[in-house]
Length: 230
Image (cartoon, rainbow, N blue to C red; front, side):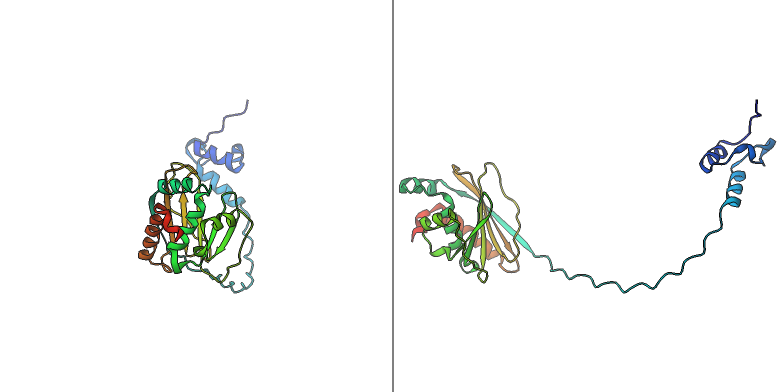
């Protein structure tokens, strides 16, 4: 049987990590015990000489950082709208119009000069843009948003309007597409008696006072739908 090699626990661990055979190491500790310094000394002797440092090639000048547009200051206001008067009006008219036509008409009128065109976001995807929606009757708006009509209005001020047919949801924040300063988001199911509306605006293009007036005007028009016919 081979004689037992005396070594400290730390020395044994170093030997395992460095792949050193303890029986080949001369210990300098008491009774020839191999200590950590004995292992470290052997490893240092066996370590290869470091390779000469390579001469670094001259570095090219860094490319200029891309220019980023400054972040926009976006603000939002919310309000609850009573839909009962509008629902009663639609039923009495017998037209079978959706509330969307009145939402678009009210949005166009309340926005005034801040939006000359309305981009209606279809719930099923896609969008239709209505030029001068403020001058259109709800029946004409309903026909256009149900078709593939899309008027090019690249030079106009566009307002985005959409409705989320959901219950028990209250919008608290929203985004603005590029090139758009104003948006109205309405959350209401088709049979809802109340809606939650959110006006989102670029605070540098439209003041908070004006945005608040747009929201209150929008709410008042929806709650008094006869005003949308004159």
